[in-house]
Amino acid sequence: MKQLLLKPALIAAFLALATPAMAADCYADYKAKQDNPLRLHYGVIQLTGACQKGAAKSEISTRIASQGWTLLNVISVFGPEGLQQRKPDAGSYYLRF
Image 1: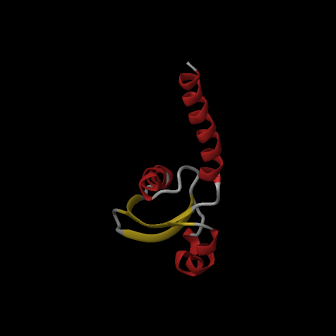
Image 2: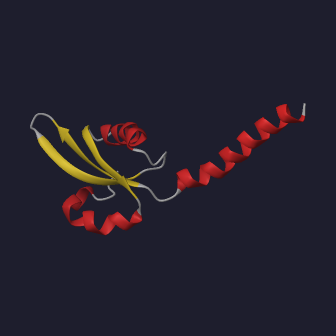
Image 3: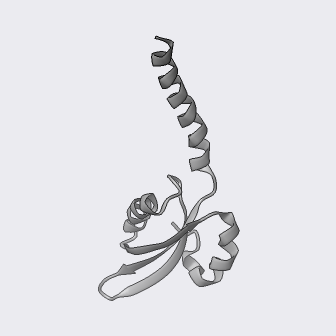
């Protein structure tokens, strides 16, 4: 009986510990486009969800779509240590969305 109660408690404790890790500073760089006329941009964005490429695709697509952009691809997901090296290339799309 104790084992049955212990498993949900362990799962709850694990999830509570995992949540702050997801909230840590996480960023992605990506490429996006607009049509008519064709415009392309490279950008850097701070992620609010899971710090994984798959989750980033969904989050970035939703956020840039509000300005008429379509996500082409997520190049990488990284921490704050990668921000400064990407800033010059991202230009006005550095942390814009």
